[in-house]
Length: 487
Image 1 (cartoon, rainbow, N blue to C red):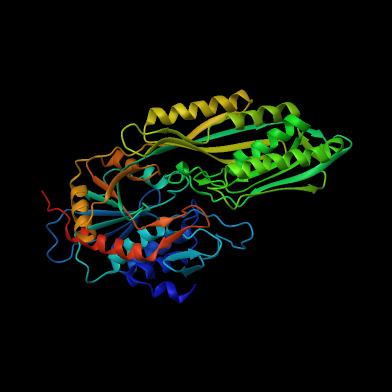
Image 2: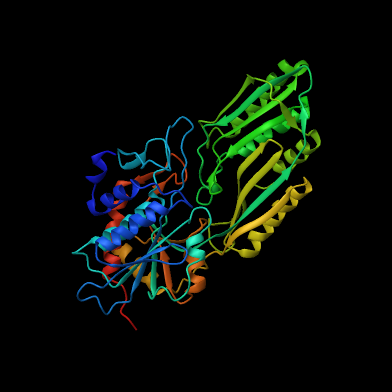
């Protein structure tokens, strides 16, 4: 990793981020980063421990003169989303992130950067290690598995934390202060199917959808970005309807919280339709690319001859699943009636795998309204059940209801306006922050969320603004100096 990252200002923040990013930290494989964080706290001589689910808590006493301030919980999550470009040779289980500076941005070479939520974690580490930053008593809470299940937050028991204020450092626009967020539920459809012999006089094709932007399935869902699984299904449906296309295999998307960027399918058609199939499909491809020319200028769709597969899907099951995927909602389902420009409910069709007699479709449905969340989840369940799938709803977590009368909100708004000469945007976001979950066991805790500007989270285009990190760092330091007095 380039030394240039460590030379960035504020050095306290970027050096901690560099140390953290040297540690592999996939969701559900956090052993190494948990040990890293425990070693960090113990090295500083601070009270450091794991809870039952393996969240790490580090306590630091108030600096002199700050003992009469309320205790603050500073919170971030240890895991990161692992996405890479197909051509990038990288092992997230063994390698640290390869970072570089690109103008005002810190990026990673062909992978996600881990600024979500690594910069928040690094901020807390810098405060814990500091000897000259005034602050009240701090409880640093580092949760696990935020990205693929909110496991750490969901299993944090009441009574462990004593803080009255929680600063969640996990949002991605530095002019925003978040006071609410969406909840979510995983919708998973599965079924088995019989495989058929490949008919005589068939020709094999490989269809590839790639070059899509991808991104965060909550924060970016309103941008009209292409979903590789939906685009692929459109191509396959057209080929099936017009030329009797049969599917051997589909592999599309990856993580539930990432808008799918790529999909690959292996199919066959009858030899007699070879030329007309390619001509017609090119027309469909041109239509799709024209529709997405503004939001997805790098979209590429390739159809190339390939070896014949050994087996294909049962044609009846194939028709049902293509129609179900076409029917299943993807993208914004409902905008909030209470907050301008806020997505209330959405779905991301994140994963489609069809192979060796098994179908697996994974979606992440989000909403700031629980009833609306399950309304959309039930619609998806109905669509897939009509295609003979078994559908499960799992991993449900609540949203975070805004509190416009928050004491800490007033503090942050005043500081932001003084430092920047304008008011911040007080918003709720469509991402799944941990505040709502943590609030179930700590209902009296006053919570707020903010962070530096990060673009392209959950994709290899993830990048963190250097100038924004400097602005954000000054904001954090002033907040800690102005925490309200104990009652």
